[in-house]
Length: 364
Image (cartoon, rainbow, N blue to C red; front, side, top):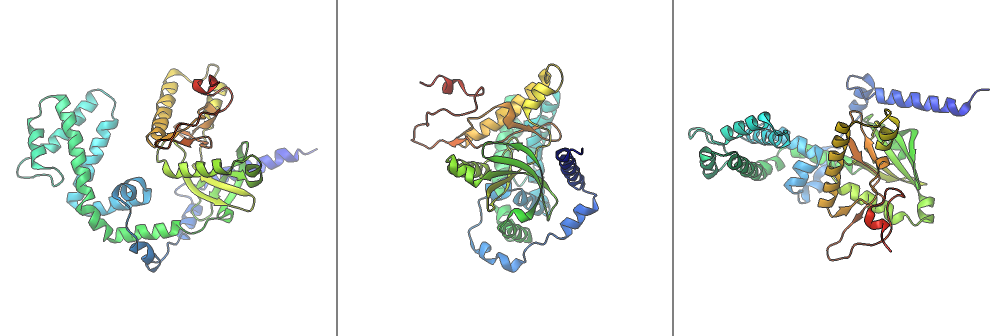
């Protein structure tokens, strides 16, 4: 007798693997999808153009499209591109591990800051250049690099930003924003097999029809939410995902509702969860270097949430997902809460059994 359940799983898995294969940049299918992606015309952006523009940080740093287009504009002006190159070098120095390589990068930055009088940098003040030329200790140099970084950022936020708002690059940004505002429904995605199940629904792999990009769609059943009074929790998770911007937390790409579900479309993590890697990979679990690596990334995501006055409250290996190359991201923010200024923290039991914080367990 044929196992129809196993056959259905085989068909679903094959379709899923074919969809992942179509993400290859050289695939004809992906190129065809991109050709069908049409942005709204410039005339549709007039209402958005009349509205006050977003602040520099939101438009040019947080939003990927805005950041890419702003960098494209800066590349057209040598003086502006020089500031970008300096900031990229500073970022490399900040992220470098302690050692000779980091020291040599710092020396290169100081050489850039201490420019010759005949060729001053437009993004650095003469007073700071003079201090850089006189610096002798590593502590002084590191402090001066931080000041130079602040001046370079202030430089880009001034005249370059104003020129960007009047350029065709900003027109293209507005077209993308109008495209983002178009309504999205379940017809926008092709659904594949279930990745995991939860108390309010399930998570499925989906593929956007117009771009071919793969996502994970968290489908929350409306009846279950209403029965368990989970509507507020689902809305709070959506609002928190809209606020966070970290490479170590899953990103929210779309949010919509169908007749039976509330849907959150997020980053697809193909590497499994940390619980699987702890208990099912090898006889003794991950080695020490991997544990340190994962711990550092989880610390970064929790610190980012705390910087936004958000408490996660459900940290456990099953909620830490890995991507294709082994980086981990925090998922399932359904129990997270935002701490309001001047209001007491809600003291109630939260988290999953066996993974609760000590202060929760000892509550009377």
